[in-house]
Structures are given as structure tokens and as C-alpha cells.
Image (cartoon, rainbow, N blue to C red; front, side):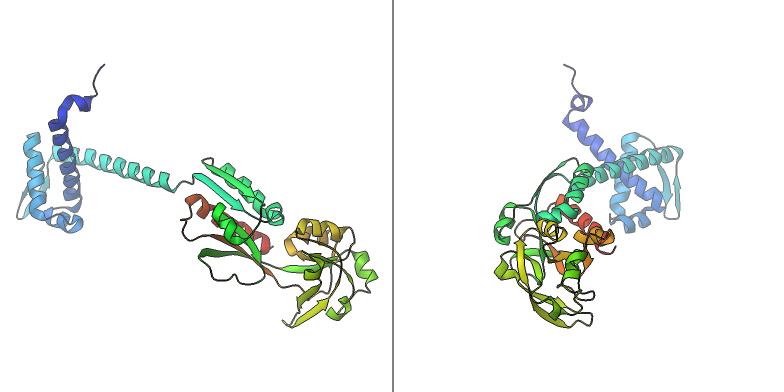
Length: 318
């Protein structure tokens, strides 16, 4: 088997070539700076060392590369040729280093995300699909499994969580991704049968659709056009912890529902649902991303969060 050319040189010859390559880079610096003093100031290499290394390179090659004295500095023709070669080598070296650096910045590995099913259906699922297509080295898993935040952050790289209140202090990193407005909506028939309520008190006893258990979701907090607050006791006919199911119930005419603006925007535009009590609305939700502080978020996670913020901005500003 033929040995490689490097192996044929032997350790001593390889060392000589390495030293010559280093000296060639110093020659490039000296020529570009226009002298030893300027090159020393630019590179931090002492002037005396630069002079010695260039002299050693000239001796090794058997040619003069520079003609210089205390008042004179000139590059010989062979010196200019070596300079051009050295500059090309430096450029290729920088390109190789940049390539290696960028490969570390490329998204790769596994990314496990937990997200409520409604949020996944409206936007996060689409973003995740597009992200996976754009980053083929990422194995992305989007789960609608929900539980306590502490348990989720043990098993997932990112947890997406809507909340009407600020999240309590914890050992997790919390980033707010979006500010999501909510509305009161119902079918036109439900609104008409309720007497087209114009004030919050008029909603008392009106058929409503709640979140979670009926006991927990019957009392609604509303915010008015002047930031005034009102509490309304509703009559829950149907409840669910799934916003997609709540939307279906509202479309079926089961009552007034609290609904994310983006989830019912098209229904309102096409007349299937209408806003109840215009100017009054439930408190908005903030959508947070959480991950454990002990776990450094991956490049894939950072890029995914960045894309989510961009998509949320477009959706909630529409």
C-alpha cells in the first residue's frame, strides 16, 4: 500500500513544513502592513521575532523575499509571488475555520416539545413541521401531553404554556413568546335568544361553555373598554379543558364561550360566531416557553423559539 505524501516526509520534514507555513503567514502580515514595525503593532508579534522568522524563511528557501534596512523596505518578485500564495492559503484557512464554526451552529439532535393541543393545532404544529423540513438534522417530537410544569420540564426540552397570570418564580427559564387576546363569542342565534346583552350583568344566568369543571369555570372575570373589571356568574351547560372542543360547542349553539381571538377569527369573519359584549373581554393570555435552567437549551431549541416568536408576532398582530 502506498504511503501518504505526508507520512513519506517523516516527522522532521512535517515539522519543517509546518514552521515554513507559519513563517509564510508572517510574511503576508509584514507585506500587507508595509514593514516590520507596522506588522508588529498589528499582530502583537515582536518586531525582532518577525525579522528572525522572515530571515529563517529566506535561508530555508535560498532566496531574498524582502529588501530592507532602517529606511528602506521593498518586496522582491519572488516575495510577491509567495505573498499571493500565502494570502490564498490564509483565505482558505479562514473559510475552513468558518465552515467548522458554522457546523456547530447548525441545528441538530433531538428536540422534544410539549404544547396544549389547541395551540399545536392552530400554529405550533405548522411551525414544527416547517422547522423539521428546514432542519433535516433535527429529530423533532411535538407532544400534546400535559401535566405539571415540573414534570414536563423533566421530560421535554421546551414546554409551551398559555397563562393569564405571571408565572411564579422557579428554577426554570421562562420566555414570553406572545400576548394572546381572548373574546366572548357565541352564535348569532344564542346572542339573540339572550336578548343581545350589552352589559356584563346581562350575562348572569345565560347559557355558557366553561373550561375545566363547571364549578371552577362558572364565574367569569371580564375587562371593559376603560379597563374596568366585572365578575359574572354564568350557567355552565357544557365544559371542557380543550379549546378545540369548546369551539365546537360554541358553533353548535351550546352557549357563550371564552375563546382565543386567533381560534375563532375566521368563524367571526364568516358569520358563524359573533362577539358578545363588544368592548368587554376575558383577560388575555400570555404564551410562555419554559425549559429547565440546569439544561442548556440546544441550538435547535433557540432557532425554534426564534421562529415561534416571528410566527406569533404575525398571527397576533393580524
